[in-house]
Length: 312
Ligand code: ZN
Image 1 (tube, rainbow, N blue to C red):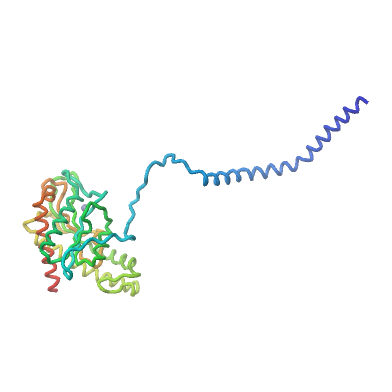
Image 2 (image 1 turned 90 degrees about the vertical axis):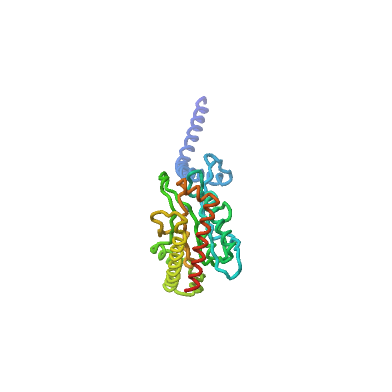
């Protein structure tokens, strides 16, 4: 009798054990499933919570500044001075804003060239033989394409970009140089231009968009060839008119793949007015007398250029 409770107890344990044994196969399956599902659930939870909780600013206290071309949003066109019907000269002072250009002798290129551009603008306005506009009349930054774009949208007849050179440590290097677009760069630019502007563009009065790709490339090239001849003619006239008035670099005539000279229908020249790294050049270019001499020479070259254009 006294065994009965023990046995029943034993039975109880056995039945408990039995029960545990029958649970065992289910539990392994569940565990395998959990092993797979738990990490997935954890990842899902992390993703969801990361979207809800603002990510802390750890290590992100810097600003990455990327300079984007603003040509998609055309710049405001500058004011044009002068009587309607006269040819238009667009004067471009290089650099500006956060881009100081070359520096030396305590001067900055962006400031010196703006002074030269304004002096020439004033001189041309006084003479009253051409219309004139500046791509920038203050300390602002324009990308190259914007400068070209301004000249093209204003339908300019001549484009002059003014710069000042740097020779780094070689302070003895001095003199002005005149740049036009190189032939290779010119035909590359023509092909690119035709491709880019194909949809809706008129070049020298011809609707390029209405032509096939091959024809429009040829049209742009023809226009560009004539433009280049005119650019070269203007460069030669600058050289001629500056004789004895402006000191030139021994290699004064150069051609290069300069972006600012790439308008296919506006004769364009870039004038490196002298070396900002040379004391004489820098002081002259920054002085009222130097600016006046530059303006006088350039105005004469511009006058001769348009006189010849009318003849031909
Ligand atoms: Zn420059």
